[in-house]
Length: 521
Length: 110
Picture 1: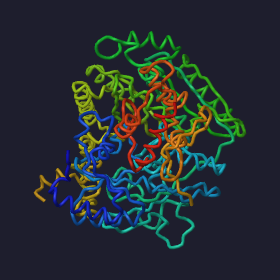
Picture 2 (picture 1 turned 180 degrees about the vertical axis):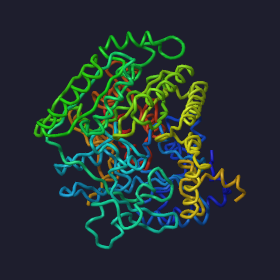
Picture 3 (picture 1 turned 90 degrees about the vertical axis):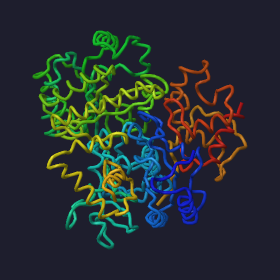
Picture 4 (picture 1 turned 135 degrees about the vertical axis):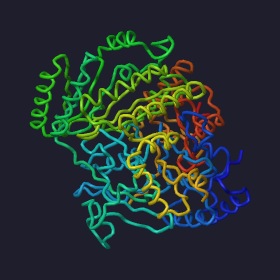
């Protein structure tokens, strides 16, 4: 079934497609139903067709991108740039606005530079974490990659979407050091010191003369990022993998208040992950094997399942990076803090030193682990994540956790909640809703739950870290301060840089074509 | 500077069977080589795909290379559409010729 970009007739769209074919080669313009289906979101929390594309284009480089933009501007064809297109649980490769044409940057897949002395790299959008790790290994590099839990995605795409990893460089957007960006009019810009002709310092320092613009192109639709610089961590002398079990559900507040100063003083020098009970019981089985009752798995059953596995209600895991002597000092401080604040906690530690074989707990290998849990709730499975950003203060975290858990239970969903101490002053909650994709009642209930939580969080001044395509407008509406001054500013920037609104309309609620129609433009 | 086109990891070849088929992609790589490179992360022994499939297919057939019947047309459809917890793979990531070579290898290797 044909899908058209909004506002275009079949005849006009066919003309645009003919021009795209002439510009980049007919084999790189995908229009068949089967090809377009490969850009649908397989884990959508509703009808995939709501976010169907009308075609896909796969440019080979910036010159192809420029040609595409010229044609798209002329015909008013909306483009949805993707890199690897593996933004799983957040929309995968699908566009926010139905009928958009996918701009598939997978063919732009060069690793342009890995600088061992400076600890930096420059890559293109189509480089996956698999590719990047393979290249570091091939070179026997002394630099380590910080990867997310699922490695199929793009190095650039993950940093742009504010993805996280598990090393001191785990806040991936913070590791960006310079970008090359093509704007909607086809002009090419290098941010930071990349603007200096012949520079050696593009990746050295993020703050140029004038505004630092890298952040403006993350989670945005202001341009197409065609190259990105990234800082890489030198291999540490040693690592310690720390696993802490907290048996008592009532110790959550104390746990947060114990971790915060350790993270803020850099004793814990990488992101930590807290898992609640429901999150700890999934490995190696499906839900129907442990619960056949109505609604969420009951607290009593949870206690049984945790006891079977010897787990506490809360678990915390993190890795430490330092010399062996430095690790000893860090571990001593951690043990002291927990013994004072949560005497019931048990702490297990594994160690590694340079030269020893790497082990799985170090999370230094590529992985597709998250795919293993997708079918937890039913087959064919899917999940969508609710991700508020919360100050790591015991009172605050407890307030937010209580609301999320209560709402999940009310809506008959297991509160499968993790919390990531991504920086010293931010805790990102990831509350996963698992569903059977073909169960329309269940997916509709999950959408209502998500929107209920948006309302709850707005009421207490909390915003989100990332959302599925389907909730972009809900998430941006949470930013109401000053009569929604920030979303309005984003739309003003969008209008200035992309007056035809062709780049990813609706992404992060910016430049939605629905708004355009409402304003009579 | 180095061009890379992998969408899945280059794998340890451990466990790979020494059966080579004639189907090849445009660059001359065999279906078996492509299968190991593009599919192996999930579909060799111990991979997530193998573990998920072990719940659904007859014992001993969860690894795709050990499946008794695996028509090429089924493989090509599943790869382009996705199935269960496996997301689909696009032509820009894996060309039609590469996919066909993999599908032919999985169908005929027995």
